[in-house]
Image (cartoon, rainbow, N blue to C red; front, side, top):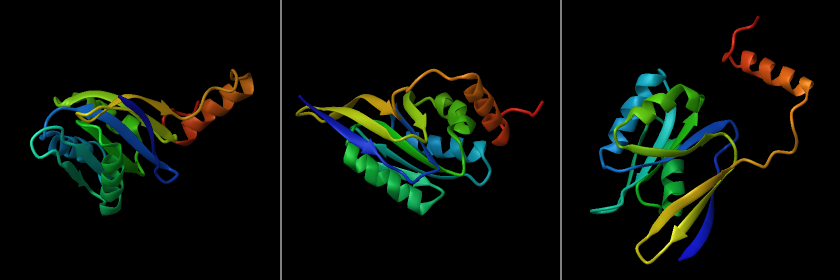
Length: 162
């Protein structure tokens, strides 16, 4: 067995959701879940099929994001994984619907951070061992950091101003 680390790189201000699912129907169901959550959502989706023709299935509302997701999945080569790249949308808005899809087994990460996927490769194929999402902590937040965190959430509309 070989261990491989593959980065998922997307432009700044984009978000990703990387997970595992189990059926060819995943692509259509995830597409429907996303477009029903956020009107006008911009996303690309790629799913690595793990049986039959073993194709990279793709969908989305933005051709550039579809191509980006497909190219990353082509590099990862991990069966039954899916990658969603979001533009002008946040995972928090779509995760409940994605988790409710019957085909979704798990979510490895939902983030705008740099991601490294840790893969195992055998003679059969590749599988995901885990992900590194962002960076290690550099300390504990101070009162000033708490204030900035709370203000940030209000600035982006996730908490009401008091």
